[in-house]
Image 1 (spheres, helix red, strand yellow):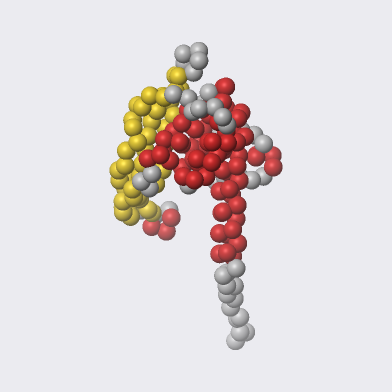
Image 2 (image 1 turned 60 degrees about the horizontal axis):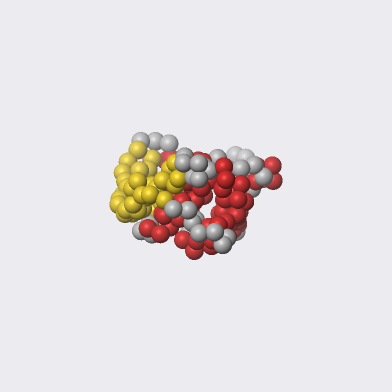
Length: 163
């Protein structure tokens, strides 16, 4: 999945699949800052843990040549969390998060953001103050990496002699 920065797509709300990808790629400090900005002076909603943040390993698989036979590349440390937020009308919303690394607070923030993004009372504010800025940050980081890699590109050519 790629995160697009085209103007027509940046104005539409992100789908759950897109925002989960954005939350999984966001560092802790940026996530904390974005959530503080979105919630403002409000205290974060109360939630119940369905699965408290836990750290484990996930097998990373690769493919020969990108499309060939699959093989086990190795293991990566991941943190996951699942929580439930109850709205004022009594409805429950489940938020989940999975990211690489060992940061339990980051998983908590991402799961809370996921739950709030699914709630109509918070969706617009979360899209504006959390998802849009974080997606722009990820896109800018990707653009800088691509520009740095493009600067090292070497063009090879072959001259054919007419014998």
